[in-house]
Length: 392
Image (cartoon, rainbow, N blue to C red; front, side):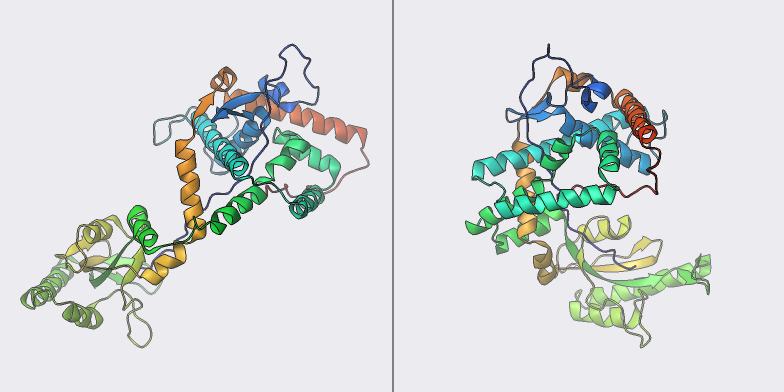
């Protein structure tokens, strides 16, 4: 039972400047992809966060990204999959719309907080941003290829530039909060981290109920072998019970009898136990058994696909906890709080937006423009280039 690598959640941030309502009588910009694909001008607000509008092109950019992600995982293919139900009962179309909304709200929350704290881009950061965007053009394969990419993602060059400002704004927020001590990690923070993230730790004695074959596969014990394994684990549990569930005896029996993987010298891979475990890392039977115990308490035998376990709940390794409960983690926690507290309102245009229809129209318009450019410059050809990246 090897542990998986635990990665702390980190918010990838970007931000696009919000715009006010435009005159609905004004003619549409012929280059406005948002208008051509969704009947909204790119500067029209589709939703507001604490009274500040999020422009159509910002939201639609993230809607394209959410759709692309679902396509990557096979949930959407052409006209198929949009109406399929997700685990929460929503359709795939609604799911991508919600994902894009969550992203857009986060970016606006960060922008609002940056304004509140007086955080802006420095001259050096502005220069870095310009250089980064120049690199994005080069990465795309030049201005024409860059324009094709922008249009396929329903965003203008200006919009993509302002979108990338968020990395610097988030850095400024972090520095500002760090200076006033709001990101200092205390012992109370580490204790809260353990509780809120569901971190636990356990040692166990495993008596296997399967054979490992030469090809690395496993074969379950016969009923007779499994009965013998159960008798062995019962005997070990009885020894612990007679000793008052002594932890020192547990360690002795674990090192002598546990079949949870050993090195060439016969030593257990995890003699200290699994001292930093997050929810979902272990099989459900093991996790439920461990979480039902108090620290220092020993379980009765618990069966999993691996065999029979006797589990001892222990304290998590606090050095490991401190390695994850950092200033970045505290900042992410604060950002989630800002998200939860934000007042979000949608417009009629947002409510009526159909992701499938929008994406179909966007692809058609973007393809027509790409083909027109290629026809105007037939001598320019080459291998397709990588897509630019949003810097965060």
